[in-house]
Length: 222
Length: 405
Ligand SMILES: Nc1ncnc2c1ncn2[C@@H]1O[C@H](COP(=O)(O)OP(=O)(O)O)[C@@H](O)[C@H]1O
Ligand SMILES: [Mg+2]
Image 1 (cartoon, rainbow over the protein chains, first blue to last red):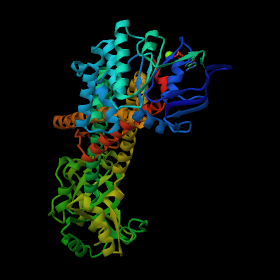
Image 2 (tube, chains in turn cyan, blue):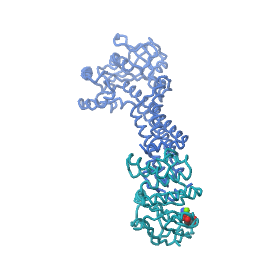
Image 3 (cartoon, rainbow over the protein chains, first blue to last red):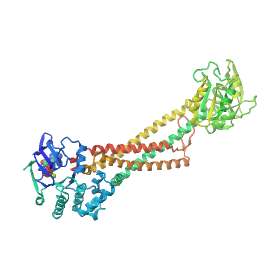
Image 4 (cartoon, rainbow over the protein chains, first blue to last red):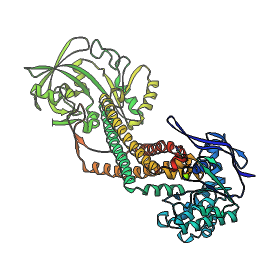
């Protein structure tokens, strides 16, 4: 089964009389257990496409099939339910909740799933261990480095064992060495949990880890 | 519990703002409670005053309250002694006191003026009036009075206009029950003030026998029942009207014009004040939550993206409003209770209420109902304001929220 499938998917932005084709006629099939890179220069439509894959944005034309399910007509609430169970997000700017500790940030998605405290503690501690930030678990996001923050974000994205993780330029705010560590960590997580990753990047090193890469240019898939 | 902790942490993000909002809520709540407590006390004392002036229940001839008498005592009560005794036998009734209302002319030999007279039962009348009848000079009427030397009490302004002092002799003139004219010499026993100038300008009080002999009657105008509990008034009213359908009954409330007028006025003043305070608290909380919603737009987008329902986002903001409401109301209530107690103990003298000349010591009640209502309202306002200001933001497009800076 494909984790993501699109049929003639397009997205236009209207600004007054001007209409901009951010995405044009995208037909793509991303198989399960993919570790895929979405490449392209800035402004080529990577974020727009990832947002649609991540069910936080809608195409203006065409269809998106998520895990075999046409979600064109899903309500916002249904989309939220899918996101909470099957999707993880890693953002360029980390997007951790500043008032929550590292532990609480990673625990948050499990709370949404309604797991009890004991189960949550077990899972979170194991995950923090796995991404190597256990000793910062009581720190606030402000108190740790960018690379550590992104590790927390990876832990948060994977804690619910989603089918797909969307990562929009996850290394763009990191120095080269830290970035390499993050790329490697994501790849290891993919291997261990079988989670699919779709990673938007213009970091060429990312491609070396990726089985598949897709190239966008001015909203058109090459 | 987890969400509550999160709400508190989020409030601590901007301590100053949270503090100011809590303060506004607390000040609002305590202002309402102190104002309300003051009004409440005023109502209670005016009610007491009204009930003591008229009796809790007043019984009279069937037509007494509705029709004009063509001759004095036309609608008087006959055989009132028996009725008084029967009514007095009721264990809920403390006193049953006969009374005659009459009018006429009063003269000092040189000058005459109209009076409104009350013939009272001296045995009870002055006990009941208590603090509400201020004797400025002389004494109250005595129970046993020599029949050939009737006494009178004068309102302070009437005494002034007649230039009368205690022990002076005056003449009362009135129409008798058969339309004749009668006059009687009386001696001034005391001069009183009710605190109401219109009353003090016309009022006289005599013993009931004095009034009866002046009018040449053995009837009385009405009997006032003073109950042991003011609260029992309306229940008793229902019971007695059923028991004595041939007589007319009124309650103190029917005759409490000052009570009604002041209550009406204060209700409007404090109602408006309360409304303003409610709006003030509402907007301050709305504003606080709104500001943090805007500041946290990107965070809302993130939480939505990772699977938080809009209602869960809203709930978290509402909890912040609730925390502000609870803390603010608690501080406000505590402060109001302490301040009310302190102000009451300090015995400040208040200016006279409308229509009165005498001030009274400030006392602020602590009505539990009002406190509960104020707590509930402040909580409701906080919840509503937080909900209104966050629910729209929670539904905003996620992508836009995520790119918000
Ligand atoms: N909200 C928006 N309104 C208008 N134009 C937009 C909006 N978001 C993106 N775009 C435009 O769509 C195109 C693709 O943007 P984006 O998907 O962010 O590219 P990338 O992530 O590859 O840099 C760009 O030309 C960008 O200016
Ligand atoms: Mg982008």
